[in-house]
Length: 399
Image 1 (tube, rainbow, N blue to C red):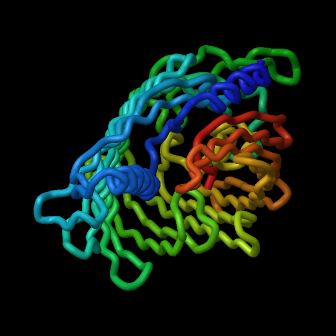
Image 2: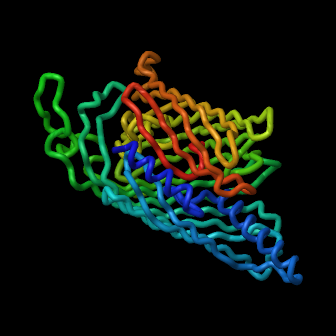
Image 3: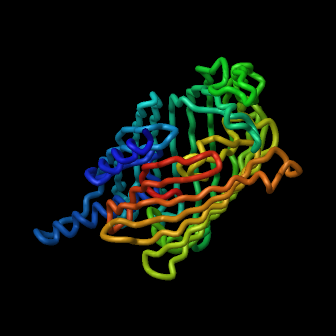
């Protein structure tokens, strides 16, 4: 069934002019697409008669993708961009982007995001993303030794807000402030687990009992500092450079949170190309938490971006580390190939970290370039881990 769906998705890929992922196109990639559209318009106008570049415009982006967690999904994203009258026409525009996604597993995702620049040199950057969703999901437990048969279903109705203001202090370095709000209304708990235990019995589901942190829902607020270093040559498909972020978010009851905990993340990505279009990429992502962390806010492994081949959220805990490697090579015409490997682990406290419980994975992928100038790729990946295999059909690279 999954192979058949993947073949259908690949057929749609060859026919569709553009695709979008579950998440809206990132701000850097959105700017790449705007630049591409305006460059194309300028070339057309030059062939006819000179005309000033338009200050406003929009791009319609149809969405279709497939992952094991969502099955086939459809939607639409519209990217509006504009420049105020006091802004030079050659500067990066402000962006507003609403997105609507629906999956055949009855998951609904509504997203409203955008970015603005507040000064003539565009050192000040403001980014926002608001999301509301009804999302049926799965839970196996907390820790890196949860059995596969412990799977149970639940549905989270949640709202999320991410707002970032940052200032480029020197070169590729920027300092910023990050605000996060996450609210969860938990519904649709299973009564018993989806599979039998090794002794052949069906055990009760644990989330509906309300003893797992976060199983009763809650609201979480935090504001904290972040550092950003970005020397990538292109956001949509980097071939060289570094992208690194370091952030710390304290969630506390005095800010309206339902629990007290701290969450810090270091995400480091390196891209290197010895030969043009032959790119080696590396990601090291580590999340450390302390306090009464709800399971919905815990870092997790699995899914389309973090250890492909492992079900999304298969392992989760207060702390997580992940290392991923990819080799991206061109093949013929607009097609390319990717070979990837990953290793990750989750744990509660540092003394609980067990190297022998690290989960490994790897796989291969096919890429189709849908925009040659900006190097926007659609991807089909096959990931394999000790849990089995999974296929993904998506837009943009995993990292």
